Image (tube, rainbow, N blue to C red; front, side, top):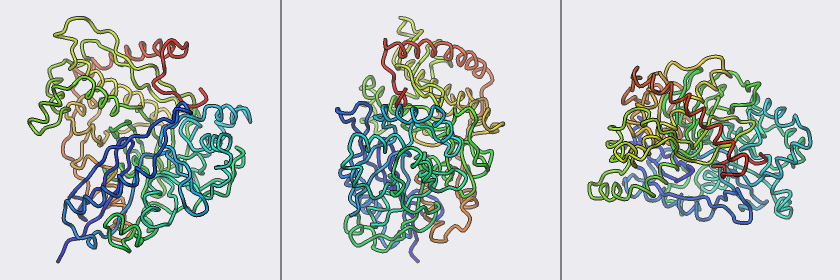
Length: 521
């Protein structure tokens, strides 16, 4: 008897991949293509989503993973999709894409100001309903389209997220699910569906919102056109997926209240599960719908660690890239081995890239390294590499504390997944800084596994998604805090906080450029 399989399409910030799993959650094959979301020079802060090029990359990944694994398309029992959150795509009445942006598009500064002039308390009012501020949500972006592209705005018939777009391109059916839909700021957290009153409150149309299907519901089936473009079998069930962190949480078994995960990719997300749809009175932390029904998540994000690492690799690690090519290895693995010799705290160097999240007033200072000396034995490219790792983990500690204040308690351990979790050094640094055990699962691409499990739920393979996650997620290794390093990092966190404030002040004064800031600030 031939085996059955599930497919996940994972559209991240830096790449798209198609991944095949067997029904026990074992990864069978993966094909990935890097992509970029470029700024339109006419609109500073913009981050366009090129749906034509990106669909070609997506369908090539699907076609190629089928070819590479040799799995007959008919053995793919179901497919689901996950993606970076916040990115939106607008469609006309014929279903053609009109406009799209990726996740941290920040072009709508004027529109945030416009929204705040409606009522100075509006952002807080809407946050308490939706869990979202104006920093990443769709509200100011839609208002930007209305103001700057009025002819296009008049043609909008529907709006969806990028994971919904993948299902749509495969089937011609568009529906939104709550885990990613809630990141628009146009959802009621408690009701897990559109709150059209929010759109009207902001002077936006309330007739462009498609149906909402809970994660794990069959949304459509692969059409003839979708089959021809991808090699999938026509009629394959397509299951409503979810945001990458929510499905990633399922993919690492973080499915119950009080459990937490850290996802290390282009961005680092700290997720803490809660059984109540309650926002923080301080408006400082994000709240999203989980992909598990009747579950929500407090979320705090660190900006760009994975992209910073890619920049550092490409700018300064040519020799490691050359050696990796010769050895059929990974340049990051070579750098990791070298960084093991650098002591905790990186000889006192302070790295200022991402900051602890403040959702209502969110900005990051110019990136930099400070407090290093001219001794090349101590301060070399390996030290700088480790300092980037430590900065990211220090930000994660700030996020754990931030969410603990909002939720009233914190986790006993965290699960660490995503590309960064392949680094044992980074996992150990994270454990040392957080002061709690860090579990690393066997499957590092957790969002894809979560999407596969959701696909299986949609067709009845897994009646209970929580139980499926508990049964199928395997922990590969647990990293325990080192008490000596913990004390070093306690002082490092205090020093880093003290140093970051003045760095941010320089950006506030216009002396340096912000790494990123929310529109309207």
